[in-house]
Length: 328
Length: 292
Image (cartoon, rainbow over all chains, first blue to last red; front, side, top):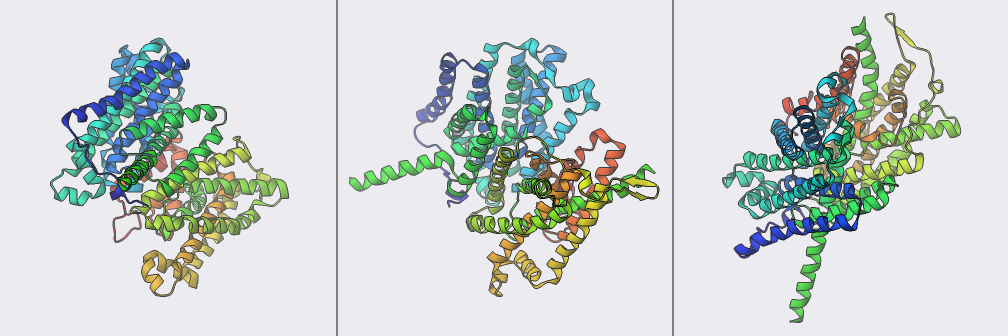
C-alpha cells in the first residue's frame, strides 16, 4: 500500500499560462455542465444538491486532502450556515445571496471558535469535531431556544424562494470551491500545507508557521460548508435542524472526496457527480442498498486504493507512458 | 431525595455504560484500532437478543452469554483479515478509523435490510420485573437487573485480563507487541482474540441496550459510538479499570442532568468528550504519554 508520502507532492508546474488555465477549466466545465444540464434534466433541486455536495467534497478536500485532518463533524458548519443565513433572512430581511455570504462568515466564525480542537491529532480530531457539531446541533435545536432558533421546528424560508437564483448561486459556490482547491493546490500555501501533513515537525523546522497555515485551510473549508448550508436551506425552503445537522452530510462528502481522490482538483468533483448520480438512481428508493454500496466502497478504497479514482488514473497513465517508453 | 435518586440511578446505569464503553477500549487495545463500528456491534447484539427471545424464547440474561462465542469468532476472523494491511500503513490509527467507518455503514445497511428500519423492543416481562426499592425510592427493574448481570461479566473480564496467562500475554502485546513476540507470544493470535473479546463485550452491552435505550434500531450505532468514545477518552484510552470507573461517573452525570436539566441532558456525552480532550487529554486515570 502506498504510504502518505507517496502521494503526489508536486506543485503544479508548467508555464504561467497553464497555471491559470487549468483551474479555470476545472471550474468552468462544471458551470457549463450544470447550466446545460438543467435543460436536459428537469429536477433542478437535485442538481442544486449535487452542486452543494461538490462544494462540500472540495471543502473536505482542502482540510483533509491537504492537511490530513479529517473532520467528521464537518456538517456542523453546514448547519450553522443554514441557520445563520436563514435567521438573517427571516429577522432582518437580508437578500438571500448576501445571506449566503453571511452563512459562510458564520461557518468560518464557528471554525475559529473550534480552533482548540487542532490540539488533537488524527482520530481524536475526527471525533472531537463530531462531538462539537453534535453539541452545536443539540444547542440550536433545543426547545429552550425556541424564541431564537425556533428550536426543533426548523425554519421556513418559503417567502425567499426563487428557483433560478438559488440554482445559480449553488453553481457559483461549486465553482468557487473548485477555484479555492486549485488555489490551495498550486500556491505556496498548498505546498506548506502538504509539508505540514507529511511531517509537521520538519515543516516547522523549515520555518513554516504550522498552526497559522492550518488555521487558514480550516477557515476556508468552514466557510465553504457554511455557504453550502445556506444555499441548501434557501433552496430547500423549509428545513428541520436534523436535516442540516445531519452526520450523513459529512459522511457523503468524505466518501465523494475519497472516491474521487483527495489532494487533487478534479477528484472530488468527479467523485461527487458519479456517486451522487448513483445515489439518486438507487439511493432514493432504496437508501439501504446505496449505504451498503458506499460502505463497501470505503472499505475497499482503504484496503486497496487509498488514493481513489485519481490514483487509479495516475496508475493507468503511468503504465501507458512506461509501455510507450519501452516501445520507443 | 431527588439527588440521591439521581446518584443511585446513575450508578446502576453507569455499570451498563461501563460495559458499553469497555469493548471499544479493548478493540483499541493491541493494534490501536478505533472501532467506529462499535455502536453497530452493540446494535447487532440487541437484534441477537431480540431474535433469541422471539424465536427461541431465550431469556436475555442467557442471551448475554450466548452472543459471546459468536462475536469473539467474528471479531477474530475480521481482525486476521484486516490487521496485516493496517499494520503496514503509515498511519494505522487514521486508516482504521476510515475503514471501520465504512464497515459501520455496511453493518447499518445490512441491518436495515434484514430487520427493517422500525425500532424493536423486548417486553420487560422477559426479565424479573420487580422494582428495586432503596432508601424509599423505586428504580426500574431493567436498571438493577442489567447491573446485576453486568457486574459479574466485568469482573470475569478483569480477572481474565489480570489473573490468567492469556490475559498476561494480552497485556504484554499491548505494551509492546514486538518484544512480546520476541518472548515467544503469538502476538497476532493474541491480538486477534482480544479484538474478538472487544466485539463480544459490545454485543453483551447491546443485549441490555434494548432495555436501557428502550429498543433497538439499525441507525442507533453512531450515537452510541460517540458516547462510548466519550467514556473511554474520559477514563483514559487503553485503561480498562479507568473505563469502568468513567462509565459509572458518566452514568451519574447523565442521570443528574436528566433530573435537573432534562432538555440539555443530551449534551452530556459531547461536552464530556470535548472537555476531556481539551483540558486533560490523557483522561482521568491517564499517566505517562499524551495520547491525543
